[in-house]
Image 1: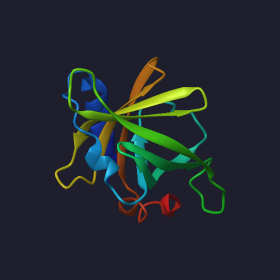
Image 2: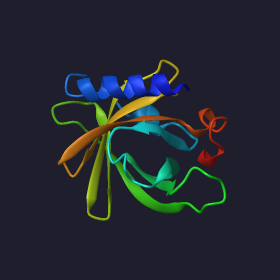
Image 3: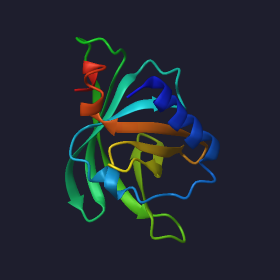
Length: 153
């Protein structure tokens, strides 16, 4: 995955997120391996890197338990910060298209899929945090970035 490709996807999604037709996020939820955030356009000053999410199990229809991980460096040997969240799929208002939401601490996060590769292995999502700001993330299965950065295991 080239850096320029990642940058282009995020730039396109960031600039056009309000004009893109949302896609159903279910194919991203169906990915069975850990997902890695390759690039994002918000909170870029955070010391945390190697952001990943792994679906642990289905709680009920449209509700899943995920493990979120990050660490303060991309160097091996540093411990990850990890926590579980319950992710719910909900219909976007006036639509049958699903998006996902979860709450961690006092922050409600809503993910809306705005672009997906044909092979369903690359996703651009619009991220809303507490409805106060938005950004985007480029997300791929961790196996696609391990060769570049083994910290995504």
